[in-house]
Length: 89
Image (cartoon, rainbow, N blue to C red; front, side, top):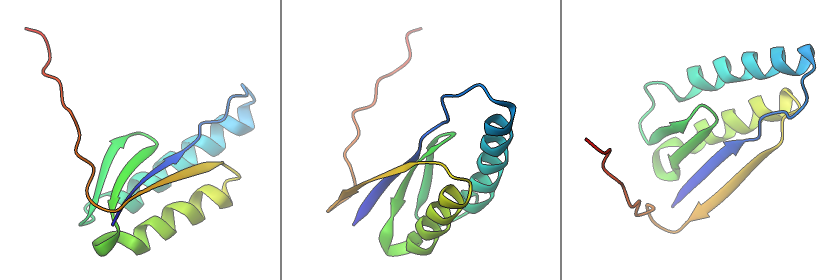
């Protein structure tokens, strides 16, 4: 089973929100780095193989909740089949 986990960026321009986002982004990068079964798709989006990284999903959820950031999870029965494009020459 797989999941795509995304933390929603704050839309306000308040300095406090920007600082919370920056701290959360650093914390999430640390949680995801070097972990088996987790692939960073973007600054705030990860693909997680729940057979190997379920605890990391929990850590990301806890970090987002603790920072007061909304997050979303999309579950898949098997690894998503991504259609990849090649960059133009």
